[in-house]
Length: 238
Image (cartoon, rainbow, N blue to C red; front, top):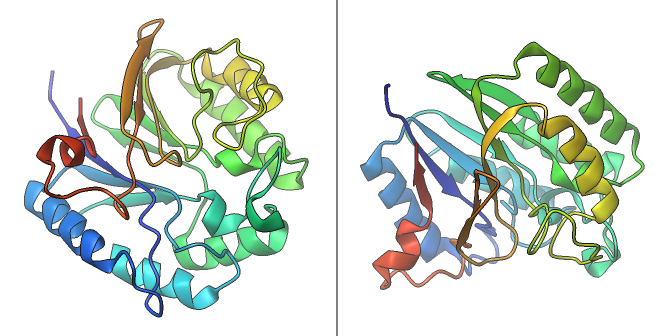
Protein backbone atom coordinates (compact mmCIF):
# COMPACT_ATOMS: atom_id res chain seq x y z
CA UNK A 1 0.00 0.00 0.00
CA UNK A 2 1.26 3.48 -0.84
CA UNK A 3 2.17 5.75 2.04
CA UNK A 4 1.20 9.41 2.34
CA UNK A 5 2.14 12.09 4.81
CA UNK A 6 0.04 14.80 6.41
CA UNK A 7 1.35 17.60 8.59
CA UNK A 8 -1.24 19.05 10.93
CA UNK A 9 -0.64 22.64 12.04
CA UNK A 10 -2.92 24.22 14.60
CA UNK A 11 -3.55 27.34 16.64
CA UNK A 12 -1.08 29.66 14.92
CA UNK A 13 -2.81 32.81 16.28
CA UNK A 14 -1.45 35.12 13.60
CA UNK A 15 -1.67 38.90 13.31
CA UNK A 16 0.46 41.43 11.48
CA UNK A 17 -0.22 44.29 13.89
CA UNK A 18 0.25 42.12 16.98
CA UNK A 19 2.87 39.72 15.69
CA UNK A 20 3.56 37.91 18.97
CA UNK A 21 3.67 34.49 17.31
CA UNK A 22 5.36 35.34 14.01
CA UNK A 23 8.75 33.88 14.94
CA UNK A 24 7.24 30.52 15.81
CA UNK A 25 5.16 30.58 12.64
CA UNK A 26 8.30 31.14 10.57
CA UNK A 27 9.88 28.09 12.19
CA UNK A 28 6.76 26.00 11.60
CA UNK A 29 6.56 27.15 7.99
CA UNK A 30 10.21 26.23 7.37
CA UNK A 31 9.61 22.79 8.85
CA UNK A 32 6.52 22.15 6.73
CA UNK A 33 8.12 23.29 3.50
CA UNK A 34 11.25 21.27 4.20
CA UNK A 35 9.26 18.12 4.98
CA UNK A 36 7.14 18.54 1.81
CA UNK A 37 4.15 16.48 2.95
CA UNK A 38 1.42 15.30 0.60
CA UNK A 39 -0.99 17.59 2.45
CA UNK A 40 -0.89 20.21 5.20
CA UNK A 41 -4.01 20.66 7.32
CA UNK A 42 -4.63 23.70 9.52
CA UNK A 43 -7.05 22.89 12.34
CA UNK A 44 -8.16 26.33 13.40
CA UNK A 45 -7.34 29.46 15.37
CA UNK A 46 -5.58 30.86 12.36
CA UNK A 47 -6.01 34.45 13.59
CA UNK A 48 -4.70 35.83 16.85
CA UNK A 49 -7.75 36.13 19.08
CA UNK A 50 -10.62 38.17 17.61
CA UNK A 51 -12.87 36.76 14.85
CA UNK A 52 -14.07 40.25 13.91
CA UNK A 53 -10.68 41.71 12.91
CA UNK A 54 -10.69 41.23 9.16
CA UNK A 55 -7.11 42.40 8.78
CA UNK A 56 -5.99 39.39 10.81
CA UNK A 57 -7.95 37.05 8.53
CA UNK A 58 -6.33 38.56 5.46
CA UNK A 59 -2.88 38.36 7.02
CA UNK A 60 -3.28 34.74 8.15
CA UNK A 61 -4.44 33.72 4.69
CA UNK A 62 -1.41 35.40 3.15
CA UNK A 63 0.89 33.53 5.51
CA UNK A 64 -0.77 30.19 4.76
CA UNK A 65 -0.28 30.85 1.05
CA UNK A 66 3.45 30.58 1.74
CA UNK A 67 3.01 26.84 2.37
CA UNK A 68 4.20 24.81 -0.59
CA UNK A 69 1.89 22.14 -1.93
CA UNK A 70 -1.69 21.27 -1.04
CA UNK A 71 -3.18 22.67 2.14
CA UNK A 72 -6.63 22.72 3.71
CA UNK A 73 -8.00 24.74 6.62
CA UNK A 74 -10.73 24.55 9.23
CA UNK A 75 -12.00 27.28 11.56
CA UNK A 76 -11.33 27.59 15.26
CA UNK A 77 -13.18 29.54 17.91
CA UNK A 78 -10.95 32.59 17.39
CA UNK A 79 -11.73 32.52 13.66
CA UNK A 80 -15.56 32.33 13.72
CA UNK A 81 -16.61 32.73 17.35
CA UNK A 82 -16.97 30.14 20.07
CA UNK A 83 -19.50 27.44 20.95
CA UNK A 84 -21.23 26.32 24.14
CA UNK A 85 -21.13 26.31 27.09
CA UNK A 86 -19.59 29.80 27.43
CA UNK A 87 -18.14 31.43 24.31
CA UNK A 88 -14.76 33.06 24.78
CA UNK A 89 -15.20 36.81 25.43
CA UNK A 90 -18.93 36.31 24.67
CA UNK A 91 -18.09 36.03 20.96
CA UNK A 92 -20.37 33.22 19.83
CA UNK A 93 -20.20 31.64 16.40
CA UNK A 94 -22.68 33.35 14.06
CA UNK A 95 -23.51 33.81 10.39
CA UNK A 96 -21.50 37.02 10.00
CA UNK A 97 -18.33 35.49 11.41
CA UNK A 98 -18.80 32.36 9.29
CA UNK A 99 -19.13 34.51 6.18
CA UNK A 100 -15.91 36.40 7.01
CA UNK A 101 -14.01 33.15 7.46
CA UNK A 102 -15.31 31.73 4.18
CA UNK A 103 -14.41 34.94 2.37
CA UNK A 104 -10.75 34.54 3.28
CA UNK A 105 -10.21 30.80 3.77
CA UNK A 106 -12.90 29.07 1.73
CA UNK A 107 -15.15 26.20 2.84
CA UNK A 108 -15.37 25.38 6.54
CA UNK A 109 -15.98 21.68 5.78
CA UNK A 110 -14.55 19.49 3.05
CA UNK A 111 -13.86 16.00 1.73
CA UNK A 112 -10.65 15.10 -0.09
CA UNK A 113 -9.04 11.88 -1.26
CA UNK A 114 -5.44 11.01 -0.50
CA UNK A 115 -4.72 7.73 -2.21
CA UNK A 116 -7.20 5.24 -0.77
CA UNK A 117 -7.94 7.48 2.23
CA UNK A 118 -10.79 9.89 2.70
CA UNK A 119 -9.80 13.08 4.52
CA UNK A 120 -12.80 14.88 6.03
CA UNK A 121 -12.79 18.31 7.64
CA UNK A 122 -15.60 19.32 10.01
CA UNK A 123 -16.50 22.69 11.51
CA UNK A 124 -16.65 21.76 15.20
CA UNK A 125 -17.92 25.19 16.27
CA UNK A 126 -21.23 24.53 14.49
CA UNK A 127 -21.96 21.46 16.62
CA UNK A 128 -24.84 22.14 19.02
CA UNK A 129 -24.89 25.78 17.85
CA UNK A 130 -28.49 25.88 16.62
CA UNK A 131 -27.42 27.72 13.46
CA UNK A 132 -28.88 26.85 10.08
CA UNK A 133 -25.38 25.89 8.93
CA UNK A 134 -25.25 23.19 11.59
CA UNK A 135 -28.08 21.33 9.87
CA UNK A 136 -26.42 21.92 6.52
CA UNK A 137 -23.26 20.28 7.80
CA UNK A 138 -25.20 17.28 9.13
CA UNK A 139 -27.00 16.90 5.79
CA UNK A 140 -23.65 16.99 4.01
CA UNK A 141 -22.16 14.43 6.41
CA UNK A 142 -25.11 12.11 5.84
CA UNK A 143 -24.36 12.16 2.12
CA UNK A 144 -20.64 11.63 2.75
CA UNK A 145 -21.43 8.68 5.00
CA UNK A 146 -23.73 7.08 2.48
CA UNK A 147 -21.23 7.45 -0.35
CA UNK A 148 -18.49 5.34 1.23
CA UNK A 149 -18.49 3.30 4.44
CA UNK A 150 -15.38 1.23 3.80
CA UNK A 151 -12.44 3.47 2.85
CA UNK A 152 -10.09 4.34 5.73
CA UNK A 153 -11.09 7.80 6.89
CA UNK A 154 -9.32 10.58 8.78
CA UNK A 155 -11.41 13.25 10.49
CA UNK A 156 -10.02 16.71 11.26
CA UNK A 157 -11.69 19.40 13.40
CA UNK A 158 -10.74 22.15 15.85
CA UNK A 159 -12.17 21.09 19.20
CA UNK A 160 -11.70 17.57 20.59
CA UNK A 161 -14.81 15.40 20.64
CA UNK A 162 -14.19 14.66 24.33
CA UNK A 163 -11.55 14.93 27.02
CA UNK A 164 -11.24 11.29 28.09
CA UNK A 165 -14.00 9.09 26.65
CA UNK A 166 -16.94 8.98 24.24
CA UNK A 167 -19.48 8.49 27.03
CA UNK A 168 -18.42 11.37 29.31
CA UNK A 169 -21.06 13.97 30.11
CA UNK A 170 -18.87 17.04 30.56
CA UNK A 171 -19.76 20.56 29.47
CA UNK A 172 -16.40 22.19 28.87
CA UNK A 173 -14.88 24.96 26.79
CA UNK A 174 -12.18 22.45 25.84
CA UNK A 175 -14.31 20.04 23.85
CA UNK A 176 -17.51 19.56 21.87
CA UNK A 177 -20.69 19.37 23.97
CA UNK A 178 -22.05 15.89 24.78
CA UNK A 179 -25.11 16.52 22.60
CA UNK A 180 -22.99 17.70 19.68
CA UNK A 181 -20.62 14.77 20.03
CA UNK A 182 -23.37 12.14 20.15
CA UNK A 183 -25.13 13.49 17.10
CA UNK A 184 -21.90 13.79 15.14
CA UNK A 185 -20.70 10.34 16.16
CA UNK A 186 -23.98 8.76 15.08
CA UNK A 187 -22.86 9.63 11.53
CA UNK A 188 -19.11 9.17 11.81
CA UNK A 189 -19.35 5.67 13.31
CA UNK A 190 -20.96 4.47 10.08
CA UNK A 191 -17.65 5.12 8.30
CA UNK A 192 -14.29 3.38 8.63
CA UNK A 193 -12.76 6.06 10.85
CA UNK A 194 -9.11 5.42 11.64
CA UNK A 195 -7.96 8.86 12.83
CA UNK A 196 -9.55 11.87 14.53
CA UNK A 197 -7.23 14.88 14.81
CA UNK A 198 -7.93 18.22 16.49
CA UNK A 199 -6.26 21.28 17.98
CA UNK A 200 -7.62 23.88 20.42
CA UNK A 201 -6.16 22.63 23.71
CA UNK A 202 -2.60 23.79 22.86
CA UNK A 203 -1.36 20.39 24.05
CA UNK A 204 0.09 17.45 22.16
CA UNK A 205 -1.63 14.19 23.02
CA UNK A 206 -2.20 10.82 21.40
CA UNK A 207 -4.45 7.94 22.41
CA UNK A 208 -6.21 5.01 20.78
CA UNK A 209 -9.83 4.10 21.54
CA UNK A 210 -11.67 1.26 19.80
CA UNK A 211 -9.01 1.13 17.12
CA UNK A 212 -9.23 4.86 16.34
CA UNK A 213 -6.14 7.01 16.78
CA UNK A 214 -6.79 10.39 18.40
CA UNK A 215 -4.21 13.16 17.94
CA UNK A 216 -4.28 16.58 19.58
CA UNK A 217 -1.92 19.01 17.85
CA UNK A 218 -0.12 21.62 19.96
CA UNK A 219 -0.16 25.30 19.15
CA UNK A 220 2.62 26.61 16.92
CA UNK A 221 2.15 29.94 18.69
CA UNK A 222 3.52 28.74 22.02
CA UNK A 223 5.48 25.60 21.25
CA UNK A 224 9.11 25.37 22.33
CA UNK A 225 11.09 24.95 19.14
CA UNK A 226 14.13 23.90 21.16
CA UNK A 227 12.22 20.71 22.04
CA UNK A 228 12.27 18.51 18.91
CA UNK A 229 9.94 15.93 20.47
CA UNK A 230 7.22 18.52 21.01
CA UNK A 231 7.48 19.91 17.52
CA UNK A 232 7.52 16.48 15.87
CA UNK A 233 4.06 16.11 17.39
CA UNK A 234 2.79 18.38 14.66
CA UNK A 235 3.37 15.68 12.09
CA UNK A 236 1.20 12.66 11.41
CA UNK A 237 1.97 10.12 8.70
CA UNK A 238 -0.17 7.22 7.57
